Length: 259
Length: 248
Image (cartoon, rainbow over all chains, first blue to last red; front, side):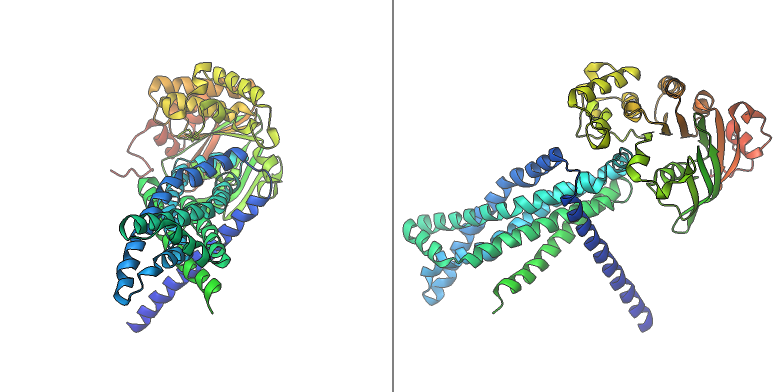
């Protein structure tokens, strides 16, 4: 009984490790194809539009509302020990160091990872991936590398937009509802933030972008047959991307801010 | 010449190919027949390197395909996929000219379009259809586009995977006729997999029957009906009674 349980645990651990190995190799392969010709500018442009530009509305809105809610929470929480004045600083640090990158990462996982996985999985199921290969086009170069590159470039920019929008959401609520002065609020925000905060935010954005795109591409390429295969690939990609983004956030926060 | 010797391929416990030996002479049209799930598509995909074989050897003009330079090797092939496998995001002409718009065979865009329109005309489609998207075309038209794409770069070898599946008898006849015309006209080596006996008679110079992971019978199409092989005879007649088990 105990031996069976151990064997089952061991088999699961081996399966997870094997998958991690495959994902790592897949990530290296996608980077390697990114830097070696031939390049597909049209595909890169399309990916930049899909991953970057078209994600901006949802990312921007999420950040504005989160910044506003954060200001309200900090004000009411801070009031318990007469610390209402720290709203600008905490909103800034909370948005830039944590909520901006994590929320943008998760929104990208929901919007982009799922879309990439579903698209590539459908291509696989309908033999379009095989067709690409027979047409002398490497799917890693044509499908994966442009999407990963686009995420690497645009997600940090979206995190930047998310950070700014979050702070703007905070200042709007603080001025409208909590009696703060806009100039003082912004001055406190700017004075409080350090370069390290901003760099960490953008680095997290790049890492989360790569995770989101790689997971979408990996699960899409590994998809099983039929509609169920596409569904499983899509669901699995979003779950894996979200979990890895949160894990990477913990690791990166430790690297940047552990004393 | 394409030569397969003792090719084996398994998916888990499922031994799909159990030692396939087959030769396809250059400039001839070979049709592989066999029941569903017998591994016909696996043979095509193994030759193209889309599926790695477990053991055995596949040679093209005497060279082991596993060691051939990939791009140059694939440039010799065209393939019509069962479902068309057209790229939804590209208009029809860009699907046809895909190979001519990128890679070693790249041409200027106008020239590539001109070739695509010409190939579309060859398969009976009008230039107006060139700017449509695959989803706007009927199944038969999509097959024709797939056929135009397969011949666009004038390959030496063309593979046809179930070219008439899902088409009505008249459209199947049209596609069969087109395939035969193109194969003769271009002088290519063709390999078709199908279980449509009308296609076999219209397309084949030679026929090979795949059963239980091995080539059961091979020979010229005109000798197919008098083969004396009970498996082939049953397959041709479509009878449920015979050595091939029919799941009812």
